Length: 468
Ligand SMILES: Cc1ncc(COP(=O)(O)O)c(C=O)c1O
Image (cartoon, rainbow, N blue to C red; front, side):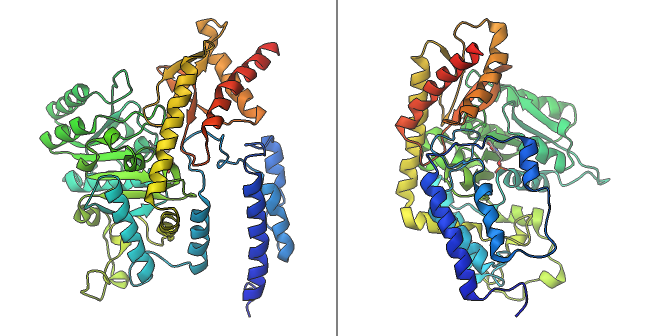
């Protein structure tokens, strides 16, 4: 036996120890500090020895417990960023994905898991109102966005005659950073992403979009794609998808929807996402609003031919030797990934266990939690609402007894102080240049009582900060 191998019985012993650690971790999830009280120097020191030359055997697992004391994003009062809460059945699905370790790149390398992924993708597409779309799982929303825009570019503006890149893309000024990164990586250059002004609710203004497209056309430039956001990272704004779709069709462009944060909520609130099904490509993140452990992004598209135009470069060694459409299918022909993890497995197991109805209900509860916080902020004179809850993000700041000029600085310090107290964990956004506290509800564990902790903690931390 190779010295790297374990007997199945030994594997089971180690797995039992990890299961016990997981059980303890879940038991303590809501009673422990949300983020560790640790400095950068101390966390670096934990790993300063690097990797050992000689293995430690079973004792190597002893180091897991302190490591697991890191930030607990699954805590019911972790309301920062947009990050899912790690639904436990999905965790087990991830475990099985690693045990079987199939390469989900083509049917011939992983027949059952490839069919499973295709089926899960179709089900999710139906659930969000995009019937007939296909696609694949990705490492996250950033790579799904990158792939969607690569498809747009290949479909509409592959290259100039001399091979130099060309083309312009459009997104709202509230766009997520993954879009300028994708535009840069595609070689279009970041200056070829037009940031379209937003209305009072942080949604892309259709009139300004049309104007920008017409100006570029008049100047001899080549508009390619409009990126509409279905759930901006700051405020959860959903761009006017129907208007964008109409403009895109009128001008012969590609419509990509960045739904990494919000689109899965269309399962529960379709009325907030009218026009989503008119996209050419759509990114979503099951490791955000489907509560799955990372990583678990999804790219959906209307036309698989467009995906193959962008991603299929099958060399002879990878050429399919069958005429059967299923058996000849390869994700590598429709994705930038080649070796691929079975990400769909955790979604499949998790949804089989709980049912889609339970996920819809949980998403509705998140939206209601955000509305509840919005209400609490409105009725607390010391707080000022900066953006109402469109989906599940609420932006506000503390202002009692402060001059306008002090607000940004005070709230910046306040955020650090709130999180240091360890009872809630929130993040920030900058809205029209104003520093805002931000709570985002994409956590299946958060209860209405947890929501009331937020203003209570903000007020308590503000009093402490003022007394310092
Ligand atoms: C609107 C939006 N788009 C894209 C992303 C990027 O997703 P990921 O972190 O999975 O790469 C995020 C992440 O928060 C997001 O909120």
